[in-house]
Image (cartoon, rainbow, N blue to C red; front, side, top):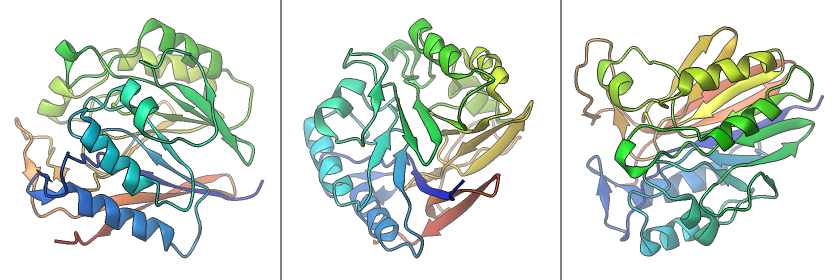
Length: 266
């Protein structure tokens, strides 16, 4: 099978103006910079996945800026809905690559696409506002996962915004997880021999974890990172941490994730 390369970005948190700041940094120039970097990579990716929180608040001006920035990519981009997004706004304002939507409801963003014999499935884990910042897979989304996570089929990758499993960080484990993440994990188990990984965001960190042979991979935020040491009772912005993205390689039966950092254009 030919190598497949893609870029994983997350948590761009674009605001309604060019000067909007998040975690002490201007979000829009960081997003513009990551697009420039992706377009100039020495190895061209097939596509980009953005695992949510495209904007900080679902405002038309924020999505207009996001649409302009990510339209400059030389390759298609695929989104997952973050807790700061709405699925309807992503459908309305942003262009996604070719895909098969699982549901016609514009309040749900869940779909599949295929590339070089690999299957990618995006799950909508955005919970009702009262549960924010947790995620939650609806019964319909769990049904999608049950249909997809079978022992047989092409190599499979799952995309969502929220971490499914505990991160050994007291504040994050109390506030940031998919509420039914354990059920999500159990649903994935039949497919683990063909599952490349679950790619997510939300935690503003590059992180790998493995349970029962299933790999979960988070990308750093393109604007600012969080702390989450095992002793941290409260998560704060890590002002020293660089902005980042990940270059992912599926090659020779391996999954290789290169976490890249970049200097903010400030």
